[in-house]
Image (cartoon, rainbow, N blue to C red; front, top):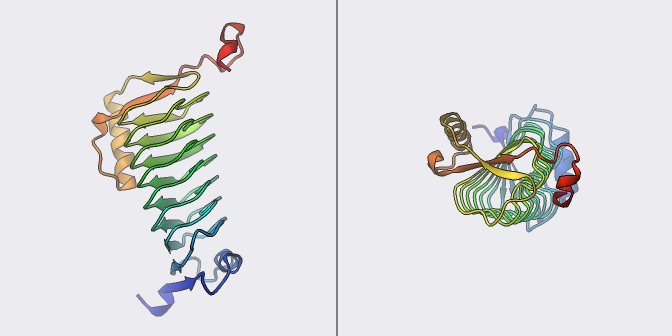
Length: 231
């Protein structure tokens, strides 16, 4: 690797705004690898990226790191605050620690990997993103999930998948309770194969046959007075 292939930015010396502006105006098409030092929990690091750039952030990040990502490969060597990878469009965001609330919220595609635990509302209103959590997720995870897949290697908190549409949730551990219109579904060989591919892509070691599958009962698609209490 040449010197030009690796760029180091120390956020103790430059602002997040300056960093993001540099990342939004790459002249090399994203060929270089970026290493970000001293993030110290600052918010909105590496948001709105559109080039296939490799970014490694050494330390904890605050709100919305990797939000609206397109094509970039972002690794956080630490914990993340609220809304990591919110509205991700493509690419990969990986958090090697824990993530706060609403990880990958509204994500439309791409892959988000939380190697530790994710707090409440993980994958809220997800619209096509794939999410893999190495630990457990908090309450209301998968709330209003429309499409995409979420695999949880640990446990899930209360009201999992409440008002879920066509997204699929796999959980290996215990589920405290299911939300409105979310039910357990049959885990077929095809689902085990699909989950195995997802876990392999996420580089998470887990036996897909140990997971259970959850999805929509489709009772809330159209209003019926008999289900009024479930809304």
